[in-house]
Length: 167
Image (cartoon, rainbow, N blue to C red; front, side, top):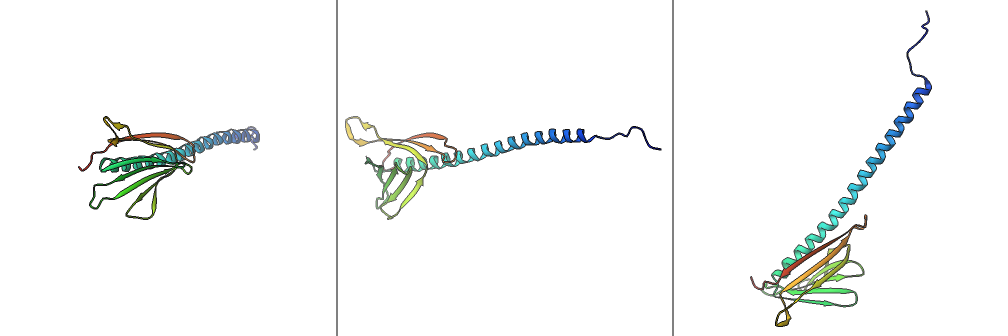
């Protein structure tokens, strides 16, 4: 009554299939972990660059509508000061603090400085002089390099604005 050959897996076959399955699952887990890490890095880069773009947009809009623009620099800071055509005029100063990599905004209407953008590794304000009048500024060029603190990826952004005066 006992069957001579039963159809079943041996213990060695089961252990071998479990080992192969484990290796395949480990490879899938590594690929999944790498995709999550890549997504998080890209998300950090996106946030950093997006904040820098919004800051550049604000800067260029303020410069375009300003009555006058002045650029100064000292040991730790670069300044971009401007006066708006509002009545009464509002003075605004953008201050890039090089050691901390933070861009601040201060207006004469408020005593506090506001943080506009962080993680700036380099930023310059330049203005080519107007022909025949080197004291007058019509163009302002802004170059900003931001670095994502998590991934270390840097991105350079540039913008230019023409002072339109009293539009």
